[in-house]
Length: 124
Image (cartoon, rainbow, N blue to C red):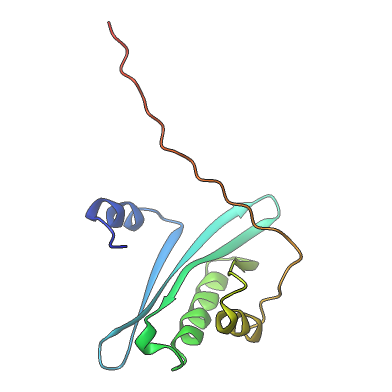
């Protein structure tokens, strides 16, 4: 899904959200990922989101390089832990995450869509 200029502008102005792009030595975009940093009662945490490696670039170690860089950046920004979620069907991705030291937790991830708020103008 292509992002609009407004969406990119919003991301660029969010100080705790970092977008990373990984290029091949030939200059081809190989992958992207988002690192979200947040302060919580239980400490500073990093959330890894939207890790994508181009299908033509898979199996070349780019995902590992991207995630290694994100973990370095998370530590640099003071995060004590890093979290990510992945569907069980993504077998290769889950193997990679475990090989990097991520531990599968005994938890459920819940998601709820939030419709945008419609604000009605008050009639004078």
